[in-house]
Image 1: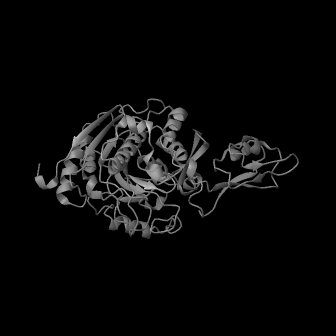
Image 2: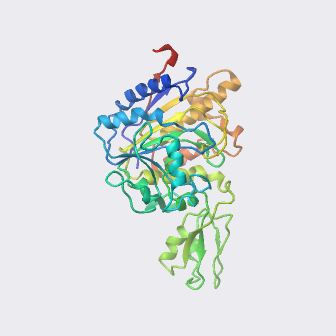
Image 3: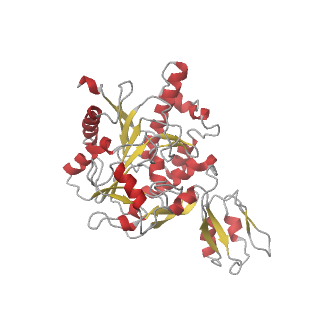
Length: 418
């Protein structure tokens, strides 16, 4: 995967100190024009149909989610490229609510679709595109965006995983426009382009796998008591003694499925089982690494067919999954656009760190200072790993997480008309 992103430039629409408001129609025009100019400069982007616009539409009581009016330039850009098969879509979620996996069964996704329509992300909204649920084939659109399975199994070497589970609709995309909203997050700590791919592109069981709630069940009637599963467990969560069946330590299990892979070659006694998530904080220390694994796996061979647009405003302490009204924790920053989601996230992390630094120290935090420390997210998450997950990404996959160039586009106030 080394050097997979042929365009490793980040375009930064700088909105700092401008009085930006995404709901203001004058600002929507200015953002449209600025973003369209940036998109027209994306020479290495190869668009293949069908195209999936992947936003996070938020929860009913939330107020800081992304609105579709800030993505009209995307549709104009796609239209100029003669792209006709386009949809907006996201997957169900592991928690309960309007977008919940169990609240939106395969034959009735009314709650999710109603919320999408209320937010303007459906065919009657500003973008004029259908909204589909990526792990619900019943919502696919004939002749435009079709898929038949809830999930697709992807096999390979994905860090701690030998198999990851993507949502069927996510895998059906020829190209993906990843529309992310940067927030903080109680488990992942930092949520932006990578999480929007990893969690949003995964199936329900894939989400449980990342949350370490995808656990092995052992059929003692088939178990050969060979101990291979225990020997290959990277977390030493399967305890085994000769002449006995392996015993699972659920607290240590990382849900990687390695034991399943080994057992399939032996007695086929292991199945991976899931349960409703009870402890959302489980695996907090390594969640960012698992997101890296899943994002790298779900991108697959779409290196030239992936565009990331990260909205760095209305930045809250918790993610848009929280069904509450939240207040921003830092000043609005701007919009990042690029083909490498890992570089997008790394630079976004610098930008929010700079805002935190300025609040406390009344001066700018330089990029070099950021890379050396301090880790300012520790004020929210004492065990945050800082830049370590990005180094893990580079070592595991050879993916560069620093942009080759930052191109800054300044936006003046909407009221000035300039």
